[in-house]
Amino acid sequence: MPKKTDARVVPRSDARGALVKAEEFLAAGEAAGIAAQWNASGLGAIHAGISAADAVLAAEAGLRSASQDHGFVVRLLEANVPAFAAQQRRHLAGLLQMKNTVAYENRLVTETEARQLLDHARRFVRWARQIVDDAGV
Image 1 (cartoon, one colour):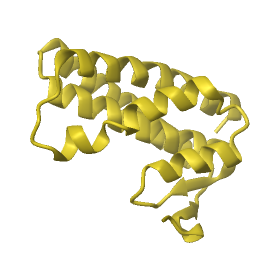
Image 2 (cartoon, helix red, strand yellow; image 1 turned 90 degrees about the horizontal axis):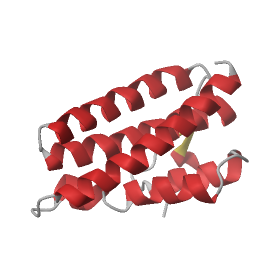
Image 3 (cartoon, helix red, strand yellow; image 1 turned 60 degrees about the vertical axis):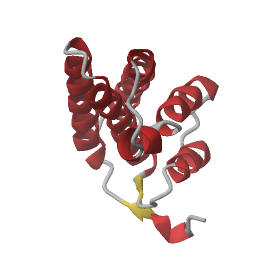
């Protein structure tokens, strides 16, 4: 179970760098999808979502998850970001639930899974960009 110390205080300006990472991971996932590299595409999408979550937390709360449990970032967002509503939760959950499968299991990501992950990532990164821009950091 994550500890309270699994949340780190960070400068709100860290949001911009995390957003750059999210957008780069998303672009890499999109490019891998075009090349029919479904595993790389899926992992790029997942990392885009994780970085986008980091960007939102930094912009809104000056926090970053340091937990190995990626579900902890969801709890931090719920507790600290009022705009983290059901739609955003669904997109982030759709990404995080596939993290171990894509990154560590021997099974290959299907085209359908990669496309679904990219869709979640596109929507979540777009939302994160709006939050960071609105925060003015």
